[in-house]
Length: 463
Ligand SMILES: NC(=O)c1ccc[n+]([C@@H]2O[C@H](COP(=O)([O-])OP(=O)(O)OC[C@H]3O[C@@H](n4cnc5c(N)ncnc54)[C@H](OP(=O)(O)O)[C@@H]3O)[C@@H](O)[C@H]2O)c1
Ligand SMILES: *[C@@H]1O[C@H](CO)[C@@H](O)[C@H](O)[C@H]1NC(C)=O
Ligand SMILES: *[C@@H]1O[C@H](CO)[C@@H](O)[C@H](O)[C@H]1NC(C)=O
Ligand SMILES: *[C@@H]1O[C@H](CO)[C@@H](O)[C@H](O)[C@H]1NC(C)=O
Image (cartoon, rainbow, N blue to C red; front, top):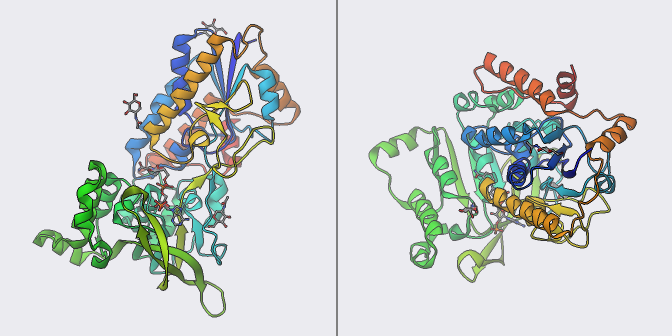
């Protein structure tokens, strides 16, 4: 029986996932009597670090080492394969623990809201990324890569990740933990041209400079931007803040500057090309005459109203058709409600909260993208989660969260789960999966070969 049970639900895919566990180490320093249980829908931990971070960014995944250390803390337990909202309700968790922190991220995607969005050949970046990163629910996607041109809508880091994976030489990808089916499909891919389309202009791109630099340097590719997209930009950047200025300068250089001889030669030899296209919003997906596959996308031509980061795209009334066989919508993720008892703001797609305290729900907290919306890098999300942990600690100190009486914690939840035929995957079970994955990877010269179905994960975990 726990003195103080704190429970964290991660039933879904999350960038924040184990970031929260960081708070555990903070918390346990402050309170020696704290116990933290983590519930996760999938049999494997690490959320978006495993299923979102690009396979060719292994250094970003090093944060898993820190998460693992925390998960192995003697007062921290992991219960994977538990679907909060289905296998166990948030209300039941609140009964069993002094506090519940929801940290299940943003597993939905914003929809474009244009005709043809549901056609075969149109994918959300969320699903496309899930496919090449081994997310079980996305394995059936097997995207059709038999076309020459792909259009990605949105210009954030996710859009750039997708463009890079579509265009990377296969020799680079095969040394990463990208899944074997994705590797096979990409090796056969006919995609030679990737357009990354934004509704606003070069000063408003949402990606960061490191990711843009990677595109500029990507072997066997060349940039093909349009000079007309950059009219007036050299003057306009004088007034923008420094990080944004450097990013725009790199865009300008890539688009307009005549490269030196060596770079020119590299570009001439490249077999694939990429470009940002600006001032364009999706209007409609176009199909071939018998509607059997997509033939292109109709884009509305925009102009900007206002300047800087806050400039707004306004329709000019003009449209432009672009031929392509693949459309990937990368216009942002969004959180979804998982339990009717938890307040949810559908407009902002977050759980309404003050510093992580869920409004009108004592003992209930949120962190990560569920708390703020889907923005920021891992470090941003860590800070966001530390703040929630701090709020909870304050509430325990002040007595807002009453910890005077013991709560049963995982003991009562585990007996509920048993009755319902749900067998959790604990951290040492995950380590069995981890070891199978790394040894399968080793055999292929990759850091890891991920298991692709929940069934196989459970088989290995419960062997
Ligand atoms: N390597 C990394 O560090 C890395 C990798 C992946 C993701 N991340 C982070 O994860 C977060 C999420 O990334 P993200 O790329 O999904 O989101 P994001 O950075 O918010 O980018 C979303 C893009 O979609 C556009 N957009 C939104 N609604 C639209 C609409 N209705 N029509 C047309 N375009 C629309 C946005 O344009 P507007 O600006 O005009 O709204 C923006 O270009 C970001 O903070 C990102 O930096 C980081
Ligand atoms: C774990 O929690 C118990 C109380 O449930 C406490 O006595 C113990 O000191 C804690 N251990 C650590 C390492 O924090
Ligand atoms: C995700 O995007 C797809 C295609 O763009 C759309 O059909 C679907 O409704 C979106 N899902 C959510 C949860 O918005
Ligand atoms: C996180 O917080 C630390 C300490 O306040 C700060 O130094 C750092 O810049 C923050 N990181 C991000 C990405 O917000």
